[in-house]
Image (cartoon, rainbow, N blue to C red):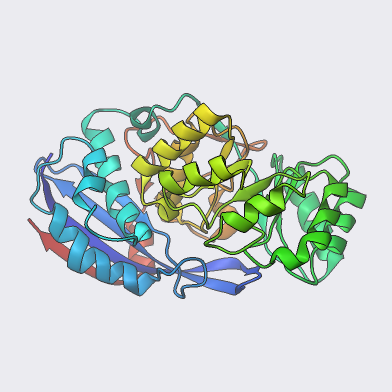
Length: 369
């Protein structure tokens, strides 16, 4: 396939409710949507998941726009590409900037699947017709409100509850949830809010039989996590520390992690995400797909990835209506009894809602090959 045109849309959407983590509060989501066209007029869609500020990784919406516009698009526009795996090779000279790379590569994966008359899940080697989903809940200062929120998601059938924790808002929160929900699959996400000085505090979490604690220590660390894991019964899941297959290999060999959260944007695209999945499957390390408050296009990519066989833990891919009054795909992503049905249409399986996109588009740039 030859990449002939690329459109980059800068979008802004308001979340239904503020999302609170140890980093701060997010109410609006700014992001990029990429539309890639080939020589036959086929179209593929991708989404950049970088936030407005560099609190999750060093990338931001504006750095992604700069990298995509000035570096990555010139590397693919007008080029003949046989398989999306080749995109990573084309981008190899560019250090990091994984979310920018993933947005371009994701659109090309969608285009490739459509040309091959496959769903994106099939193109990746997926094996499921539905995926289990969990929910990620931001910090609630009021315990009663958190309990009410968790009960609501359990009633909707979500298969796993993830709650954000931070120093001063951790042990008592988990204790309160376990008092009301003794058997629910529960995990805590620390977003790098602790250090090894907090070992004794973190060891208290062992009493609550959590599925895992996610990224308790520094975002760039695998050494201290290995030290911590030896002192905890609770499995450590790494998120921010894993940006590549090499990161995953080193973390597993050091004993830094027993579970890995794979986020497409964080690792640089679907091809690298699949490589990490395959390695973890060989090593007996379960994986799950984390969320980045994606709109519908990014959410569709997550669904396709989660159909791979080693995604044996429920991910963060909740339904569209949990986040947005109106999503930018049709039909929207729907959770039914804790499952999302994998779409059967070619590519990502959802049609972009162009009218909805127009409503949320702040700027648009077109590139010709």
